[in-house]
Image (cartoon, rainbow, N blue to C red; front, top):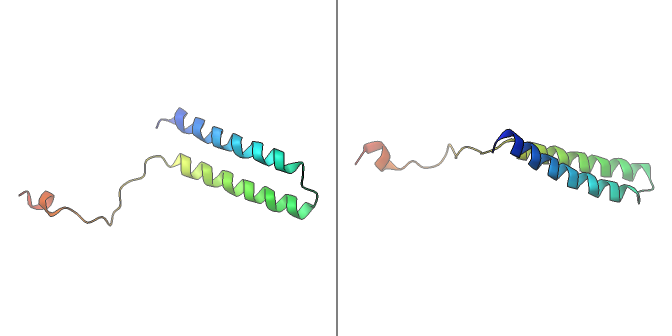
Length: 73
């Protein structure tokens, strides 16, 4: 994925989270509930941004190697 695709994916996900937050915000009456819900949304947005910005992850370092590749037989 290139930079523009990553940015679009992040913005789309964050936009959905923001829409949910704005809908839920209208029904919150206590300050404690507002803060706790706000922190949950902020953590989900942070997680989304981190996951989507990582791109392609490398293979496992602990994967068992194929012995035929090493020996050449």
